[in-house]
Image (tube, rainbow, N blue to C red; front, side, top):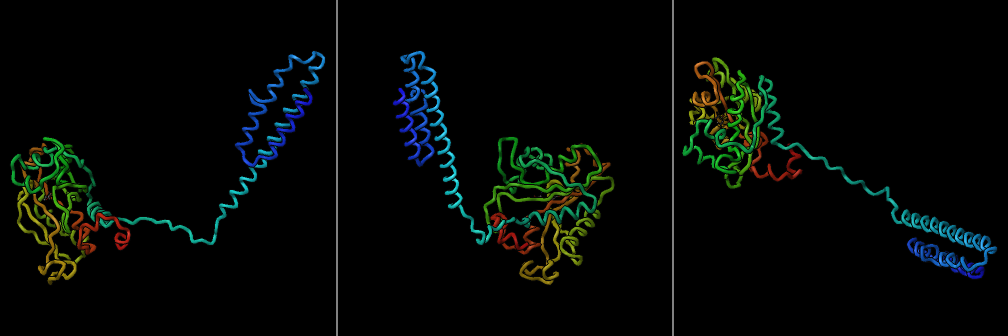
Amino acid sequence: MKEKLEKIRQEALAKIAETNALDKLNDIRVSYLGKKGELTEVLKGMKDVAAEERPKVGQLVNDTRNIIEEKLEEMKSKLAAAAREKQLREEVIDVTLPAKKNNVGHRHPNSIALEEVQRIFVGMGYEVVEGPEVEYDYYNFEALNIPANHPAKDEQDTFYINDKMLLRSQTSPVQVREMEKGKLPIRMIAPGRVFRADEVDATHSPSFHQIEGLVIDKNITFSDLKGTLAQFAQELFGENTKVKFRPHHFPFTEPSAEVDVTCFKCGGKGCRMCKGSGWIEILGCGMVHPNVLRMSGIDPEEYSGFAFGMGLERIALLKYEIDDMRLLYENDTRFLKQF
Ligand code: DAH
């Protein structure tokens, strides 16, 4: 038995000394020390050993086990160290290589223009509010004095979710939602995304943004509307900017107007920017229609108000002299970084 143990010891140590991989070490452990390993087999033969010999043989088995384990551990740390060494050598960092550039994005012209418009109106005491992009037909049309089958519904053909819900075609429904809250007076602007079934071209997109405005109080008149928008135009386009109100029709305002500003490029003389006319259209507006007030629970005998709506992209295109709306949606930082 002694010779057998000696043989196992020598064989195991020789195998350990020969290994060059960590997983092979484990195979060796299993084949000598495991449940069915050679040393365990020897232990099973102890019952045939004479009783007085057993402690001695037992000690010998233990010694053999210990030395094999010790050598296994020794080899394991040696191989692990070598592997780490190899990894370090392979992963040498060249500190002279140029560093990766950290690319920071850039504010979008829409955002810059929106912040500018918000700054102007907040300065005049307006609140900035928001409404849902998925809207009820009632808020988008009905409550704005656009009943079913009204031709204005065709002009703003949009995307329907079902009979009652759609992607809003304008930010005007936010007016109704504000008025329904029943807190007067109101002085608000409502920026947000709107949707229309339009084909993409240089001036159209099925999804764009508007900024809505609404003021409701006692004794609000058309001259308040004119003064407010004149002040706005001067702050946005320069103090020499003049405004012109052209009669127009919107179902939710009466009277209604479209507003032009003197071309900030040529000062009104006529150029490529204003197509020779000296004027540039920027928004629609009017005095809130009594029907609209009534539907939202406001007494038109007691209160009056004005409203306006502008396209955010249109403002950004004008202000930054961009000639194709599609550029605003590509998010190419080489383009965005110019503003
Ligand atoms: N909602 C109108 C549109 O999308 C724009 C507009 C015109 C809004 C007049 C108004 C307004 O609040 O009074 O064409």
